Length: 110
Image 1: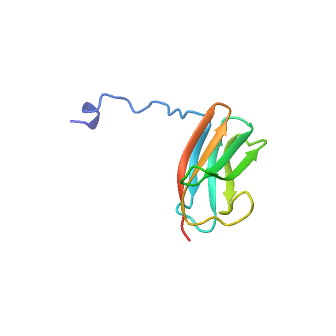
Image 2: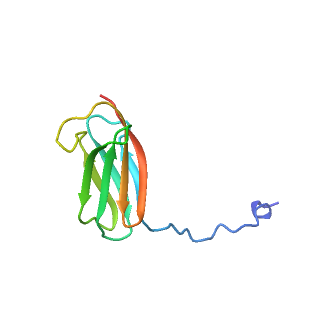
Image 3: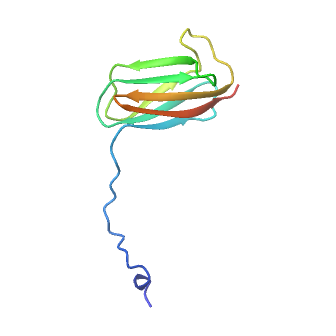
């Protein structure tokens, strides 16, 4: 018998990936002393990336007046809004653009 006898489902379907806004993540994770946050935009638009500590307090905010369509990279050097280095621990980063909002976790290890 042939392999096609056991698999009646065609594998010729076109692969369609949804295009849209997506918070991809950060690398490296865990990181020291800096990390790159990646996100995808379906069109050029303003966005905000905010970083919070475990207590939910705002540590750093990036107001991006315009982002590029496609993959965007944002570099964070482990400092707060006043420029002071933050301590080791778990941090959360949130991307907001239009009605989209997504949060992910990252770890700073010194």
